[in-house]
Structures are given as C-alpha cells and as structure tokens.
Length: 308
Image (cartoon, rainbow, N blue to C red):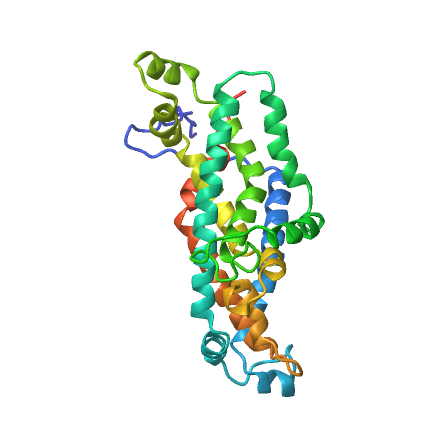
C-alpha cells in the first residue's frame, strides 16, 4: 500500500525573478481620447501632404490623368520654377524687414505696458489694461478705411520711404502690426508678471535700483519663457499676414512673401502645382521658427498651470 505525503509548497528563492504581472488596463476614455487626437492629427496633415504630393507632380501629368491618380513621375521642378518666376528671394527679404522689427517692437512696448500695470497700483490700472486688450476685439476690416485715410496724411522722411508717407512703405506695415498685436501681448505678459514676487523688485528698490533697471535687468530676464512663446506666435502671425500689405502697400516690390504668391498666377492661366510648391516654400521659415523655439514655446504656455 502506497501512502501519499503532502509536501509544503516550495518558497521562491531569493535569486528567482518574480513572475511579471500585467499592468492595469487602459481606461476606455483614454483610448477614445487618443483615437480622437489621432484622427484630428491625420485630418490636419492631409491638406499638407496633399500639397506636397501636388507640388511634386507636373502640370501636364495632373491635367491628363487628374489629381486623384497615380503619378507618372515626381520631381522638384515646380520648386525651382516657383523660386525663380516669383522673385522669392526679394520678397523673403521684405518679410524679414517687416517681421523682425514688428516682433521686437511688439514685445518691447507690450512688456513696458505690462510692467507698468502689473507692478504699480493706481486708479485706472485695470481700465488701462482693458483698453489695450480691447483693441484686439475689432476686426482689421473695420479699421482699414480710417487707417487708409490716416496713412495718406502721415508724412515720413525721404530716407525712410520713397513715397514720403506711411502709405506704401514698410514702416507703415511695421507700425500697424505693433499697434494691433500689443493688446494680446500686454494681456499675456501682465498676467505672467503678476506671478513674479514683488519682493524681488522691492529689494532692488531698497538697494537704490531705478525703475528702468528693475525693468530691464530683473523683470525682463524672468519673463524669458513668456517672451519665447509670444515671439513664436507673433512671428508666425505677422509673417503670414496678407491683409495689411495688400491694402496699405501699392508697389508690388515692397510686399512680403505672402503677397508674392500672386505673381505665380497669370491673367488667363493658373498652375496649381506651381502655386502649391510656392506655398510650401513660403511656410518653411515659420516651421523653422517653431522648431527652434519649440521647447521654450511649450514651457511658456505651461507656466502657471500648477498655480492656484
């Protein structure tokens, strides 16, 4: 007769690895959120990818086979033609001459106003901030008629504009960009400067630092993330602007790159493949600006998110 002996279960040794456990399943709402964001990203990229696909095909290929067809060949000929036929180097330089001073002037004036309304207490503090912010509530189309008449009567020295007026000059475009964008930047910078402890500027004031030194050497360096975020947004907005140069500049050679795309369109014939290539080349500087300031842009947007 055989007897069965119940042995105790063997304990895991110290060198044995524990069996990995499966982690918690992802909640359905997170899965749905990722699917929604992925779908939006795909829908956002479809026009861009379609423009790239169109720009790489010749006009003869799309005219004979249609745009929704397999290409007979891909080339960069449309890009070289768009670069030479529209005079893009000249118009790119015009955009640089408009965008760089406009962005720097907007940030400087907005920072000065934001410093004044956020660090000093006076009777009309909130009213002044609302006045600067209210300017962005008016659409540009409402302002164009009085602004057009004003520009025809505002003189400029001959060395600043060959028309000797704000109208039909790069300075007129720079000034209107600064005036129109200061409201938004003042609102953002004032809220950011309020998060800076006042004890810092009060200590500097006790040490004898004047107001201009508190502004330039203390407050402005602390606002670097906010400046990076606003510089990215303002560079893209001002660079891509089409309305102000179209209405306030009469000479075609003074217009920025966005207005130069019209040179690729003839009176009786339009090549969509060529225009797609020109539009993609126009968007390259804004992409470079975003990728260069991407880290500072994201950190500037998330500043203060954890504060109550």
